[in-house]
Length: 143
Image 1: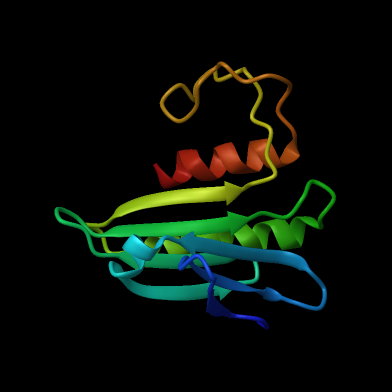
Image 2: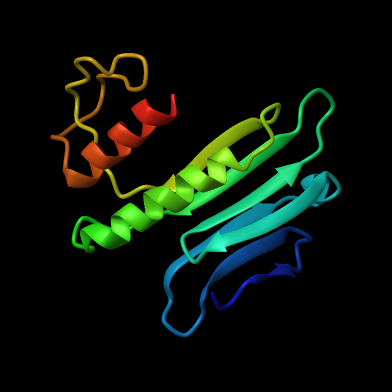
């Protein structure tokens, strides 16, 4: 894994990132405000597609997982590796933390939420793609 680190911008916000700076593919970052910088407990680069940050808060610790999933054109092995890393990342979080999973999951879930009503809404345009099926399967298994 190359290119992991952080930068404080002129505005005072902090950018924590991971990725290959030469290839410019699969990079992820979390931008942290000057106020939130004081609450940052730790940041953990998982891969060039996943980064995790943990924050103090008044009532409950917050873990933010930022992702950039492989596209539909990627090899199935690459997608499987991403979801395995994501599952391991979620499993490694403190069980009392509030977990926020965000990012570009390169998934279209479509509007058919039959048998998935608890994990997805039905007000989405389009039709589910391969990555959408993978994402919904992941969410159902994690739930």
